Image (cartoon, rainbow, N blue to C red):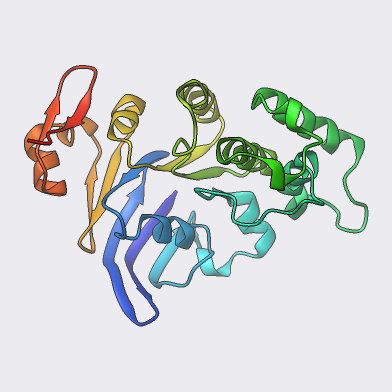
Length: 247
């Protein structure tokens, strides 16, 4: 159980959002306009950014968890790979997902290496194993970051725009893989893709103007009237599509 209690975010002295109070469900989709603080909120949940208020993880305060405990609890997949290292190859990068739980003096053993190879196979990036990170396309980098998060074996996986750089085939494959990940992990997924958010069928939170609106039943969100109220533009919805009206 993760609980936000009167959480407020200020970055560089600028108010961003809050106070927010919410018991997070096992699976949550987070949407909202650019600059609303979605990625910031996700990083706060993972202990990567400061905040005011309290975030409870089970019966503990998030701030009281050790670095190893946070790694066991959360894995954060950013929207893009910020650092490229021509000397670090994909297999090594994926293996680093197990670093927090590994014996730092022993290094990675054959079991962990074999698990990394299996994770890469499941993620359909085994053919990239020996490629330097700096040679990857944005879509390939997204798949590699997802594989590293799977290697970390955390209880909650936090995905920040996981399909933004993927072609239609790999986006569809990610959605299918995400469905299987939900059986073993809690998940938080940030997206601007309303079609994806609707298709996943999980509870949805909309963050905008400093306020978090929570929709436990996503069908309450996906109406033309509610979407227009939140986003300020007109929408058309069919049983299969969510689209903006440009007229």
